[in-house]
Structures are given as C-alpha cells and as structure tokens.
Amino acid sequence: METNPAFDKYMDRYFDYPGQWDTPSRCGLKTIRRNDGKVLVITTEIYRQNPGTPVTEWIAPLATMLLGYLQEQPENLIFIEHTPDLGSRLTFYGETFDRVVFDWNGDRFINPKWNRLSKADVDQLMNG
Amino acid sequence: MKFKLIYPRWEKLEGQTTFNLPPHGPVVMAADIPADVTIDFTDENVEDLVIDDSPDLVGISMMLTTQVKRGWAIADEYRKLGKKVIFGGISAMLHAEETMPHADSIFLGEVEGRMPGVLEDFRKNALQKVYNFMAKPPEMNLIGPANRSILKKDLYYHKGFRMVDLFHASRGCIYDCYPCAVRFLGGRRFRPRPIDRVVEEMEQIDNNRLFIVDNSLALDSAWEKDLFRAMIPLKKKWVSHTIEDKDEILDLAAQAGAWYVYQAVFDTSDYIRNRIRQYHDFGIAVEGTILLGLDNQTEDDIKKLIDFLLEINLDLAEFTVLAPFPHTKAYADLLKQNRIFDFDWDHYNAGKVVYYPRHMTPERLQKLYHYAWDTFYRDEPQTMKMFNLITRVINREVADGTYAPRRRDLIDVSFGREVTKSA
Image (cartoon, rainbow over all chains, first blue to last red; front, top):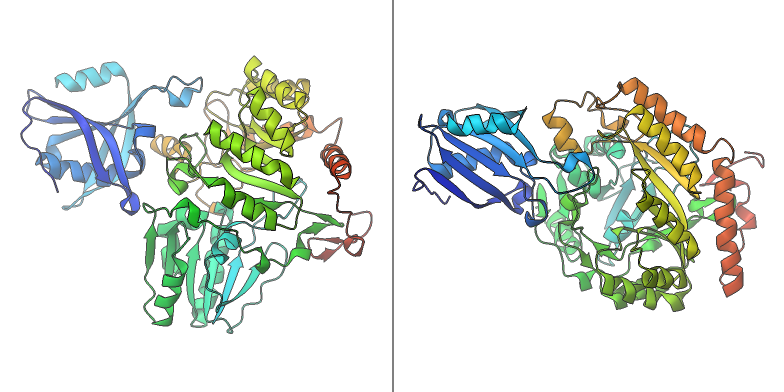
C-alpha cells in the first residue's frame, strides 16, 4: 500500500483504489489537518472519471485504505463523502455532503452510516 | 459431458400482459461452451424444471434480481444431490456475495473466451470459487453470434405469434443513470461491437423481429450510423432503447427497420414532447418508460405526468416504481438515507414499493402505480395498443416481403401451454 504521510495541512488529488472485485477505481481526495490535529477526509465521486466502483459502494474498504495511506489512527479521521453537482435537471445529481461514521473492528472500518451535511456544516468541520 | 443450464422463473407483474422472451444471457454464454459439451437448457418461465441427478455440471443464469432467490433454491437442491453448481449472469453479478453460499462457483464478468478454461477446471475437479473477470472485458471482436440453438423455440410463441429475439450490439455505458446498474456490469466505457460481427449474427437469426437490448445505441454517432446503414439490407424490424434524435440518424434507423423505441419520460417538458414527435415523424413508434417515485415527484407531479403521456400520443407506456437494485446510484442514495425498508429480492420487480418515497407514503405510491396503468389504458386497453403496433410491423413486413404468418399449429398455445381461444 502506497502511503503519503507527508502532507502537512492540505492535500487535493485523485486517489486510485482497487474497488469491488479488484476493479480499478478512482475518486477525488481532499484532506485537511485541522488545528486540533484531526484529519478531515473528503472523498468525491467523480462519476465518468471513475472507471470502477463508486465511492458509496466501497466506502468502508476505501476508508480503511485511506487510513493506511495517511498513516493515521482510526479515531483521528473524520470522513465526508461528497458528490458533485452534475448540472442535471434531476435533483438527485445535485451536490451533497454526508458525514460517514464507521465501527472499527480492530482491523478495518465496517458498518458505515451516513448523515447529510449542509455546506455550512462542512465549513465548520473544516475549521475544527 | 452434460451441462444443465437453467434460467430460473420469476413472478410476473400482476395485471399486466405477460410476454416471455427467449433469454439472452444463456445463449451468449452457450456460444462460449466447447462443442463436445452437451447443453440441456431449461427456461423455467416457459417449462417445468425437472431436478434430476443426470447432469455433470449445473449452470444457473440469472438476469433479474427477482430471479435470485429461486436460483439459490434450485442450486441448493442440486447441491444436495452432490452436483456442482456455477452461477453467472447479470443478477449473479449484482448479488454475488449473497449467491456464494449457494454456489460451488460464481462467474463474474463477460464470458467470451473464458468458459473452456472453467470447464477444464471442472473436469480436473479444480473449479474455482470465483472467476472474476470484472475488470478484464474481452476484445469486442471475440463476441460472435450467440448460440440460440439451445432454445426450444416453439415455447416462445403466444397464440401463433413469435416473440422477438434478443440481440446486443454493444456493451458498457458512459452514463450513471439513477436506476441503472450497467455501469457496474459492463463498465463505464461504451464498447460497440464491430459492425461486421453484428451483421454476421443478425443474418443468422431466423426471426425477422428483434429486440436490441443495448442500454443505449446513442453513445457513438459514427458507429450508430454505420450500424443502421449495415442493417438496411437485412430488413429486420426491431425494438431498442434510446437512439439519437438527429434527423439523419432517425432516418437511417427507420430505413434499418426501427419499429419502436423505449423512451424514458421523466417530466412534462417540451424536450420530451418534441422528441416523441420526432420519432413519430420518422414512422418510429414509442413506448414510454415511466419511473414513478423519484425524489422530485409529488403526487400531483405523477398525475400531471400521466395526463401528459396521453396528450403526446405515446404508442405504449410501461410504468414502474423505482426499484433500488444493488450497484445503482438509487440504491446507494436510499441506503445512505436509510430509506429502504424491504430487502426481499422477490419484491424487486419494479411493481412493488420497497422504500420510503420522499413526498408520499409507500402505500400512496403503490396506489399511484396502479392508477397510472389504469388511467393510461382506460380508453384504449393495452392489448389494443399492442395490436396496433403489431399491425404496423406486419404492414411493413408484407410490403418488403419479410412477413412470416402466424403459426397455425400454435394458435391455441401460449408459451408452451394450451389456452382456450378466448383466453
């Protein structure tokens, strides 16, 4: 597993991951180290630019991979799942943010639960 | 070696005309089975399954989520008899993890070039638990004609009328449509088959009427035009999902035998109205596919939508309630919001509400679903609208010399079962 602990305050990049059934997959990844030391992780579904498993379907394994990638402790990460606005007339392709909380089984994240956030909520989480 | 291939039955939607079409997945898979293997195919929708201990290997091919529980039950019976069972097909992929406890092996991905190896593993008693080709689609020129010889063709007639044969010209899709899992099943890249291979297969089908099952033919204009040009001499008549609404393409499609197309109608806009009119201008009929219960629909929106459908003269309409199939955005969104209350896959037939709609109760949406069918077909019943469509294609076939009359010997038979003349 590739690791990248070198980020200091902020990172914004694509993240490639093996999705379900090992399908090559990609998401957007933003990480922000907050003043309290916790790391906010925002994964973005990039739809057509993601050749494989969507973020939502793979959120728990993806979060586990990101934990290893960032070399952090489970309790130190705050996960947000982001879907961008696709400019569709259909409301379900609008922008959304969800905070995702997991159980930690000692080895990996399991049992994801999503809670919808407003942009203001996200700003608040960014600032810690 | 005897390979028993089974297509499990599922419960059809209540109150709607049932048509059993010859399945596509099994015939595509059968094309990759070596000639020294005898395939004994049973489509449980049109014939009874006899579970016996004669096959060497059992294959269960599943397309729909509503087939999986029956598929699992069949597998359990065969495994009690000591037979090995392998699963494949669309819904085996959608429900892979749940299928595994019922399977000796599960095949994920596209089959071309892979079955000889799988069968060799079986002969060596080394069948793998999972054959995972999800990220390794085959070269498109490997996809040759499906093996339709495994079908008992007389079972796919209704009162002497032959059902359409299913056919595919491409795989994959660039879109992420809300209720659709093709992105997961075929990948996010549109992969058209080479035109010569498409024509080679179409020529071999002894049925003049086809259903081109591709998710959309409208993803590569140049290929789409080449496809329609190549189809013109074949004189087939066909049904398909979306085609592009450019005049040049619609003209070619009409020349190539476009009979009717499925068009998703999701609002009452001029965009939809004009699109339907455009199809009609080129002599192509339209069956609207109308998904009820989306988050942007109130009860009033649904009623207005039905009025709109009557106003724009759709030739047919098919109403469904949103079924959040696994590996769709609909499933992901509703799961995130904890809005799915029923995970019994038998209920995922797109006629039963299994989640909490945003603007109404599940019970109200269920009533609106029945209201939609009843209202749209109140003045002209579904059978009459279908008769009009059939008449239309017969007239074209008579004109170009491709008409095959009804089978008189099957006039009292519907999908293999005898019916009375008035039924």
